[in-house]
Length: 176
Image (tube, rainbow, N blue to C red; front, side, top):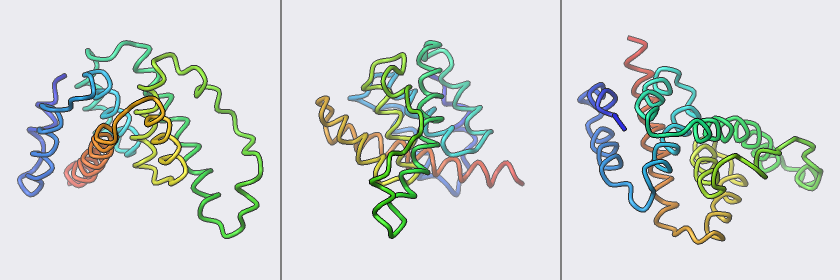
């Protein structure tokens, strides 16, 4: 993975973000490189910053296989829908909405084309950025159920946080 261009573009006023990203790049154990790359890319796309998504996509292009890239994009797409819908059911005062069938197709969750744990990780990173309590909770519980440690889940939250912050920085820098 080549994140040097991204790191080099982080302005001095965001030194902490640069240090945090560098730390994640250099030490993302217990995630393997593909899980890390997919999590970073999913978070970058979820931030809706096209320039950052492009930079990250280029940085991880050689790392992820075509099926993994497709699964990352699928995670972002499906979470883009579910985060909004389930956040609505959580925010509205009438609990009857949560009891209604969603009626939304989510077939990709059954067969994402990659290891389900990887897809859950990428979905969690997107859902953290999407701010959906129900989705974050559901993906966190699935990861725990599959033996993923709380420290690993926390690492995914750190990735989402740092990439979100980076998206904010790049939005400022790009708009100048």
